[in-house]
Length: 114
Image (cartoon, rainbow, N blue to C red):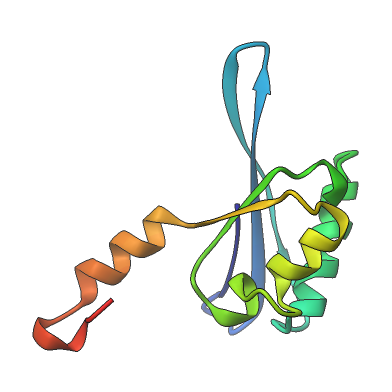
């Protein structure tokens, strides 16, 4: 799971959390939050790759990825999801449920149609 946001000092941050199996137990681990210089897909992708490597992980090991619905993250043509799929072709994208719930919770009346 990856998310990017801007902190109160207007610095872009990238957070990464991984979920994996240990035997039959599902483990979720927050890897960290790092400053990034750009929110463009290629820069975010490279930041993911670089920060996974700090933990001995590679994008080839990914089986699923979860992001918000932002086009630069979840798009299928040159965005982060697509760049990760080049290294892990069977990667499954899952729209982050927390972001979906937040979107629904903030919709007012007829303004929200999706």
